[in-house]
Length: 343
Image (cartoon, rainbow, N blue to C red; front, top):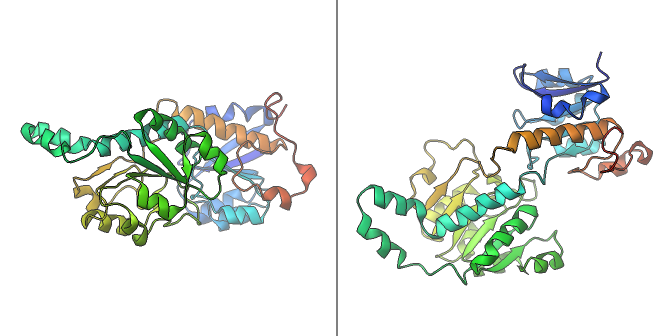
């Protein structure tokens, strides 16, 4: 019989060998459960951990059913698929993988910034439909990229990596993030400003806010009205940080000039979403983090985070560190890069 039981979602038979690299030595097993809240809650009743895969959402009902539950681990940066508040109330740490896909997402953000500015999709279509002679005159109406102002909403790891990529293009850069020290921004060549100033000054706005309750609909209609009519909006963060109907209205009525979106409020996108028919919008299917290392890196990280907590150590990436105050301090040992989990 396994020493630790970890519940995850799935039809059964999935390969968890990468996660188990860190867990096998602890005598742990990963058990897949299909179904909704009731099935998950029943399975979690005697579980030590939950491995959250995004769908279905790990609700308060499921978390509260885990009388032995020690940890909930996510294989993603975003944590909106777990009721973090419920876990925090019970002193259960929730872990994620915040630093695994930074470079990929920053690459994608930079790609959307450049592609929207140079109207790449429309230019491609003109060539394919025999409108070759219209392509150059179209771009005559837009200024060159050098000297334009790029504004970051939220200045975490991905935004900083994007700023590093953007600097050689000659951007002036601004950032709004009330949770980041101004010194961190200035070290990256970015001027800290308030949200309104950023919206009013930026030629391109890049959204990087996480999918938290505080950031839900961070940008509403009033914010899009503050932007320049020539401004472009790029989002590689979370779709729910933007009031999507307001964004659609802004694009339809010309409050802003265009958008490059990797994330939407409802995913997959519905066939009747007006964004699908807009020439001034570039869409990708929430793929910014994707590369050939995606599954390997995140699965190993999930296994390592689970192993740390199950062996009595504090995880590397905890999204609700307040649980440390709610738990007996002696329960946790510090994480050690030298010793590693379980050593």
